[in-house]
Length: 341
Ligand SMILES: [Zn+2]
Image (cartoon, rainbow, N blue to C red):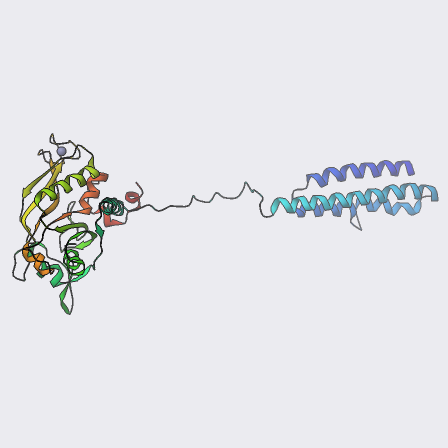
């Protein structure tokens, strides 16, 4: 009898070890525990109940073995419970968990990149990099730049006006910062001013109501067109490569005299002629000229003593050429597909 019970005990212990090791969750482990040690139907409990039917010696042998097995089973259960807790706890890798989407990183807008690039170029040459208000007064935007109220240039630069404030305008160019800089710093002066500008325009692939300019100005004694051309060449070569050439052609701007269009050799064909440059080999990228004496005077600078040049590469146009963007409307569209390229 006692020999049978000892064999049964070994069998129960062997099964118990397998069942405990095979349990993967707390619930499974609990059910294994009940099967073994449950008060009513536990397999080990059942054997222990039979002890009372044995003689004293068998009771001692079987009882000692049964208690030893019970203790071992309890410690196996505890160990397995700790393993399951560790696997499901923090730091565990749960391969059934859904994959999180990769974080999205922002990038600089092409206008910002072109602006930083040009600002750094001029900063290195000793220019001040200045800012000015986007909501300007009629004086800074038009009057002081030699565009009086009845001047036809006002028609070319129709802008947005502010209700109930007839002398406030959304600036049509960054040239207003020229006047502010002259008044603040006087001559001699070398400054650039990047910024957002506005015009009341119908939009198409080349026109936007909101665009970016980059304004520059140098004032000193004996400043000539030679200085202007040399500086434009060095800027164009920085932007588009060392083989870029610059030519100046006359164009009217009210705030310069003479006024010029600065053209660079085409960034696509290098001057041979292609679709971008309409076969001419040249691209207009910059309005420039020698600062009009009236403008110097409006800024509080004596035009008899000082002269200067001003230039305004369209920042938007620069970014289009530099990054090969063919529709100006993309810049303000907020389309992530465009911005992530
Ligand atoms: Zn070309």
